[in-house]
Image 1: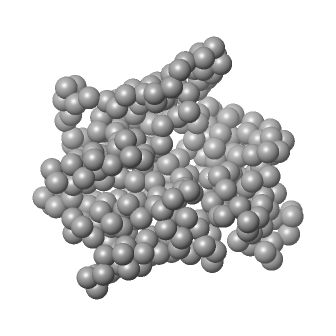
Image 2 (image 1 turned 90 degrees about the vertical axis):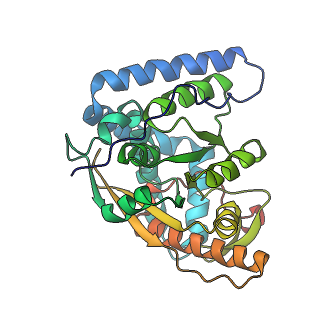
Length: 316
C-alpha cells in the first residue's frame, strides 16, 4: 500500500509543557519502571512484547479488583441481560488489550509502516487521501479502542497535517516522557485536554490543520446525552468546533485483528444539516458521535477501555 509522505515538522514547533505539579519520589520510581519496561518491550520485538504483556495482564489484571470492578459494573449497566461469566470474559479481553497496547508503544513507528509490513490494513484510504489533499480541515474522532495510540501515528505517517488532543498523565515525569515519544512518531502539535488546550484547537482549525480527538471519556461538565442507552456527561467540543468552522466530523475506527495486527477504517463524514440553533445542533451532533462510538464498541466490547466510570454514579 503506497502512502503519502509524512508531514515534515520543524523542531521549532514546541512540544507542550508537562503537567504542572510537584515531582515526588514516587513519580521518579514510576518513571524508572516505565523506562525499564519500554526498553524491555523494545528489546523483545513487537510480537513477543505484545503477546507477553497481553497474556500477563489477562491473568493479573482481573485481580486488581478496584479497577476491574468499575469495568464489570459498567458492562452490567449497559448489558443487563449479560451473565457474570460473559462480563468477566470481556474484562479479561480488556486487560489483555491494555497490556498489548502498552507493550506496543515503543513499536508505533514499525506498526504504522504500511510499505514494509502488513501490520495495518486500511479501508477507506481514498477518503483519508482526500482529507489530506483538501485545504479544508476535518475533525477526526475515535474512542480509546484497540491500540488508540496507533491512530495518530498512522495519520501522521499518511501525511495528515493535524493537531491531536491528549489527556496528560498524572505523573509529570511520565507525562513529559510520553509527550517526547509522541513527538517523534506523531505530530509535535499536541494539545492537552481541557482549558489549557482550548485556544490551540481553535488556532489549528483557523490555520487549516485538522484535529484528531479521543471523545469517549466521562466529563464532570459537558452536556448529558445518551450513550449506549443511558445518559452520560459528554464533551461537546468536537461538535461545536465542527459546526463553528464547518469542519467535517469523521470517525476513524481501529480494530485489533490478531496480536499486533490491525484494520483501520476511515468512515464517511457524519451526515448532519444544521438548523441554526447552535445549542440544539451541538447536542444533536454529539449524539451522532456517541451513536457511532456505540456501534464500534458493541461490536467488539473487549477492545474498549471500560475502566473509567462513564455514566453518572447514581446509575451504578
